[in-house]
Image (tube, rainbow, N blue to C red):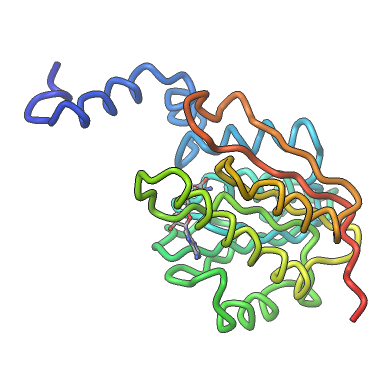
Length: 222
Ligand SMILES: C[S@@+](CC[C@H](N)C(=O)[O-])C[C@H]1O[C@@H](n2cnc3c(N)ncnc32)[C@H](O)[C@@H]1O
């Protein structure tokens, strides 16, 4: 096969997996930037978090597939003039190619105060209805270390929520399962009325990846 020529064994394995993957095929057909779009579609079909008119922050947005889904669901292009028009802001350390209906903060770190200041400017009234995070650090291959890194990133989303999430709002975040998962669930339960775990079918079975869905945000009283 032409696509396998000159590739290492690991690269060949990756190419073969991509070729067999129905979500990769479907993402090409439906013009999504990557297969992860189907994870958010599945989450949103089940939990109905993204409504027309909503303001959404997409953390770790590159290359932009979740933002594509969010743009459709919150009607941020105004495709349906009968419905309210929402806002989508995506943030990533990497470049995110432009997308109609979304504002992107490329080369921005979600945890950085300068990013928070820009977010407050871009969101209507500085408030979001939903924070999405598919963020992940570069995996080192050491499972527990990678898990801890990602959990620390998820903790930072709780601080972000305190700045921008409106009461009653929702947070979806990816985590890699491990020893600190219960700590994250506990922290989320302190400020959200409902917290649950979800593994979409589109998430590969051999991956430790799961999503936490936290709803009904209660802003902590200081
Ligand atoms: C799995 S990809 C996200 C895919 C995206 N949801 C989509 O559908 O196109 C994870 C992204 O998280 C980003 N990321 C990791 N740490 C970050 C940070 N501190 N701030 C912003 N983005 C970060 C990475 O650069 C990477 O692009």
